[in-house]
Amino acid sequence: MSVLGYMQKIGRALMVPVAVLPAAAIMMGVGYWLDPNGWGADSAVAAFLIQAGAAIIDKMAILFAVGVAYGMSKDKDGAAALAGLVGYLVLTTLLKPNVVAQIQGIALEQVPVAFKKIENQFVGILCGVIAAELYNRFSGVELNKALAFFSGRRLVPIITSVVMIFVSFALMAIWPYVYDALVHFGESIVGQGAAGAGIYAFFNRLLIPVGLHHALNSVFWFDVAGINDIPNFLGGAKSLAEGKAVLGVTGMYQAGFFPIMMFGLPGAGLAIYRAAKPENKARVASLMMAASFASFFTGVTEPLEFSFMFVAPQLYLLHALLTGVSVFVAAQMHWIAGFGFSAGLVDLALSARNPLAVNWYLLIGQGLVFFAIYYFSFSFVIRALSLKTPGREDGESSTPVGEAVPSVAPAVGGESKGLALAYLALIGGASNVIDVDACISRLRLTLKDSALVDEAAAKRTGASGVIRLNNQSVQIVVGTQAELLAAEMKKLLGSDGARN
Image (cartoon, rainbow, N blue to C red; front, side):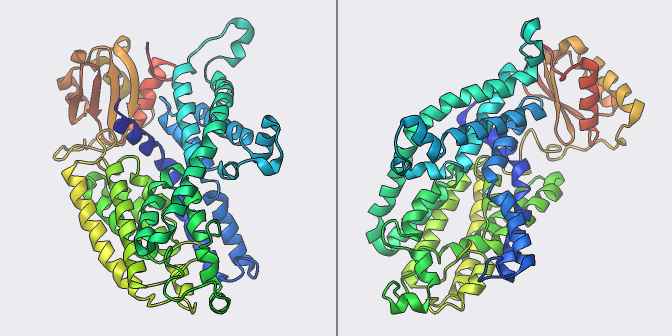
């Protein structure tokens, strides 16, 4: 499998945890709206909503570890998800500052600050990928009778915990250098004015997939290099009086994000929806609408960004470039606004009352322009490069363009077992089956010899088409009963539906 293909596989696996994030983001946004000053301290309702949303958003790395492990496992088994969680807990515990200090025999104050940021999305995805690969490799291993209880799926979390010890030692050596390099890079572009702001924003987005944007943010948003953009902006008149802020300058590392998060990314979501195959539009619309609203209202962009950053990295690079342009334009034009949480409607409305906000309303006009830019550029690139954005995947789509979905009703009870037996017979019998899976409307089969599939018999049984991808891979379009049929076929084959 190519690198791009593998990244797309990770991206598809992320769709389960990503689908949870918009709800959490909206809860937090409403909470901050209700109590913009106390952030929950002055309102029980706001505190309830903020904490409920934060329980999900702040633990996104864990969601990714579990979701990727589950999604990339060969049979979508819960043991793989458990292994992902075990791997994440072992790695992040071993790389906590106090544990690093103990292992290396140094004082806690000497531990690199990088280890305070070890619970990030990159680590979650890394743990999920490792756990899934270990599951796919070892879930069928049979130990001797004395250890038989730990055979198969039960073995995988144990192996994962051991493997993560070695991964932790590798990261213990590598992680501080990666983190420090990002901080030094940020410091080197501080003196470049609006251009530097644009460069920063480009790398801010580019580093989101690996969770290292926090290192870069600390240079510009906080006091690592003396900029302290967010606290100085929030200080308002006091910051001006104390000489900590400059009108039209303080906030330049924040302002240009509003047009992207409130308008640009929703434009990208519309493009992804419009590019989806007709039979998948309803499914894609639900995800894009929720994610776009979260981005617009709260400024939480991960639900949208993670929906395409791995399946279509070309789009994510385009997104990073456009973010850099937006931040540069806002800084160059001195259109200034700031945020305490993120660059959504909530913070824009609150920012309008800050005396350091300069022509903040022009950011809305800039946002409308970027909505159009995102929509048309994403639409063009998706179609020109045939990118597999949500709703366009070969293996996950319902049917190809022009292909009819079978009209037969979904099978239930004994009918599904009878159909499963019929499909097993027409694909060459159980002895010809290596693996059985399903997407929305297709049986996805890996066979020893695809030539044994009787296409005419499949159509007589109710299928609308048979797609032979190669000598072993076959897809049979059976409609919405695909999941039921696959489950019944797995039962008939025994265990997890795979034959060696």
